[in-house]
Length: 238
Ligand code: URA
Image 1: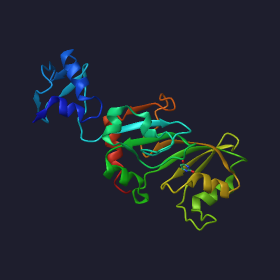
Image 2: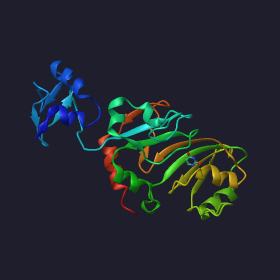
Image 3: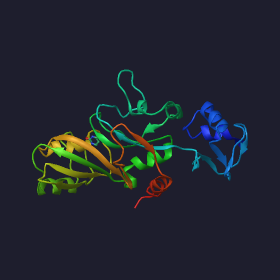
Image 4: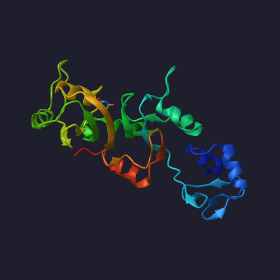
């Protein structure tokens, strides 16, 4: 058993002070009954709700962000703003970090969590978690580009890339690129090596997790419970 305020604060969504205020305002329920005091003791089987919405008190937090351009995928930086700076103070205190990096000018899906084990597994090429990117390129993607990326390219500096999916869109000026790994500037380097430099890049998905297009660049939301469950299943190699 632990204190109600401690358990709710451990989700990173509210400070202890906010929880105290919410208890006073009658906004917190334990098993459907309004909580009376922040110190009240709760156990694992107790259902906690805020404003009638059940709260997941799982030990880890998972956040989906629509990363905007111009922001670093890092936890902190002396000079530049990072994706973690876009989160509220309670989440910054929890020590969330981005799962893999997107370049400063890349936009789209970024998962942030404090679950190090899951993050590690999602990034491992052995786990076959596909990441899908939408790229706008100079020139036109053609069948030879599709074949070469599909075979697994070796870049000029000797970097071996695993076979990657490439699907031209529109007139070939845009394409979907599917990677199982995340080497530095990988999409940009692969397409540049084909003479089709990337003009804009956006990540659309990571395994089963799709960018929620209702999120504007810079916005974020908590993952739904079923989104987390599917990511966990994804850890098993196929
Ligand atoms: N590949 C890139 O080149 N940049 C990214 O940000 C992600 C994948």
